[in-house]
Length: 59
Length: 364
Image (cartoon, rainbow over all chains, first blue to last red; front, side, top):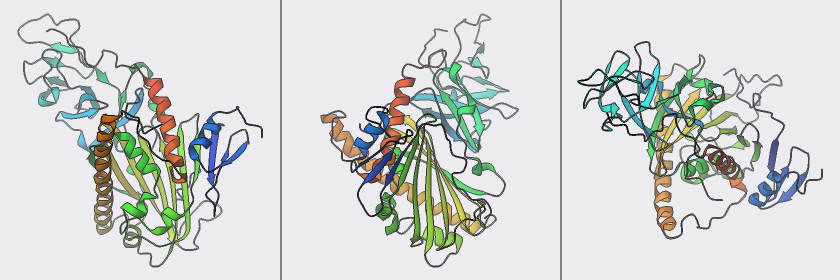
């Protein structure tokens, strides 16, 4: 029980998309690697927007 | 975009546990291709197409002569590269008499096979699961056949909120479905991360009986999925309030690495490899037996559910192929990301064939 199995060795390529589920709400916040953000309640819409970078992304 | 059914070629897949492959020919179908595996006398795993070029007899129903395979029907003999080195009754060996050989790597207790263009096979791209074969960890494992497309298993594993409903009494508690997730995608490296950190949760039997923790727990689930095949769940449990140290050490935490290898057999069936590695009670056989039985039960609960789902979708797909409706919500964020990566991998690997073509028939 000595090794923490955190994700410290995870990949960091520079094209990381993040989707946070905002606690206490039904909202998702998408964060592009360019720092642009969008909130939505539809994960499909959010992925379309994130992967559509740079279309509609103004950080 | 629905779950994937077609295969992503030009990828590494887990074909077997190393312990399954020995000096007896071993058949397994991967991505619709019938393969046979064996070890050379030095212990090196070999994968060849499981059909003799002569009359397509399965080489897995044959026998080994040294490092070569002798077809059990007419004696066509192949070396580990798939080249035919002997044919019955004549000295001339037809120039095209060979079976496809597949790149194979044994790593982390798995035998990985490359399905696609042999020239592109890079062992450095195989994702790692070191706990399965490492000092300081004890592993239990198994494999269950699934009569469902691999995409359904990907969906299942990327959204663990189903634990609350399908696996109650084993690994599911109310907090799993109630706790928001954080999803990250490394688009370039093609990795999906889904984290669910429960800071004050009921301890399900899977963990209370294996760790001895009484009372409520901190429970972290950190998924790391390397599409298409390898799924890692980094699981940490500890008594409520006990967190890792600032320097990353975690003497008070119990760590379980749950590993799945998702290998399509056909477009409607999947090899569901599962393993559970732990860093506590390393020598305790009772804990090993308990975790093996519990996790197998959980996997079989998934198998029953996914087989049922596949049957239902099959009926629907028959009427309106891939045109059915589904509804995605927040819990599906990780699964949707995985689908998108696999879709891109399928497109990239389209048309990739083994060097000699798996279906090639040569008159002997």
